[in-house]
Image (cartoon, rainbow, N blue to C red; front, side):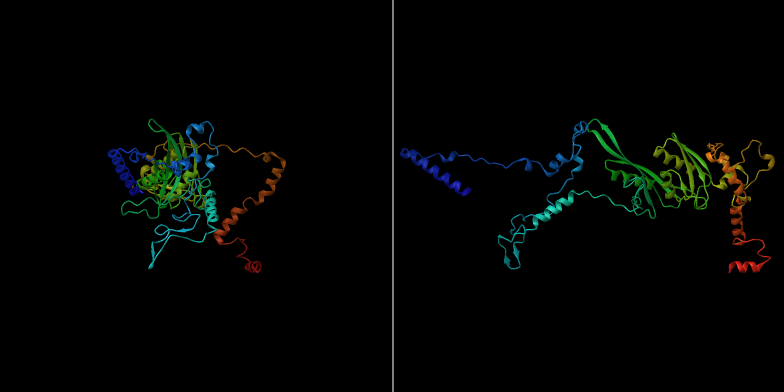
Length: 427
């Protein structure tokens, strides 16, 4: 095309020169002074990229949201319309060498040609696009679920990232809190950030907690998890299942009363304290929360209380007295738990000195226990009749437990005197 234009211009120039020299009046147009205009096919669909077009129908501005606009914008899901399509293949099934097929196949040079139409192509594309619009609910197993549905608090996010060659083997991280924060800045306006709080531990007395922030929830969780792995603390566990003693701890306006419990009692406490106990390896404990239920204050207060608890040997050395334990299942038989290196005499003990173990470890604090009011039926006459009938059975459970402990079975003292009765009863 360009060679033809150049030849026309050359011919026109020769004709113009010849006409001037010969002074011929010819109606020859001046072909050297023509101009070309290019027309660009620009419309709404090719002026903007697909991301901006989808954003216009799936989002709303802050000012519009305040006025109530775009209430149904969140229901529309972005679809990738290029998915399922191949370059060089369209409605008309053509073979384009170098685009949809190789130029040379074997020793044959391929040529542009039309192939048979595929009647199922549009049906497959429509089915694929419709599948992208369907919302798939996140399915989690009961073990992987958190405190509430599929939300992050209470869920496991794995061990912290390794530091160099050191890996956190046997560690598991649980999310305690994940919330969004709106921060106002002078140059960016109101921006959204995320804050996460997690606890990590190996279940053998080693645990730590961390707080992380980020523009995305995943980044905040990763920062918090790695911070928790860098701030590990070791806690001693009494008999591998509970704390050493009852204690009181507080942080801010949050107060926690922790009680030591027997094996098999379980964890009866706030869900955040339960996750911390599982990370440390504590299996039996009761914790009563008073005051503010701010989660970060609860976590900090409980960790402070665990760090401040003392072993039985430390308490014995501190008081310079023997530490004796009385248990109901042992008929309150005294058992020496710890003894100091040097014991004080009776004359050295002060008259107003605190000798009660629970009162001493609680710093003379007394837990307020509400009085149990009598039930409505206890004042009725039929309840007194019930008590009179039940009076002869009231110690049967204790005696049954004692006989099983002493003889291995429930039997009378007459079984040894009359063994034939025992054989008949077994038969």
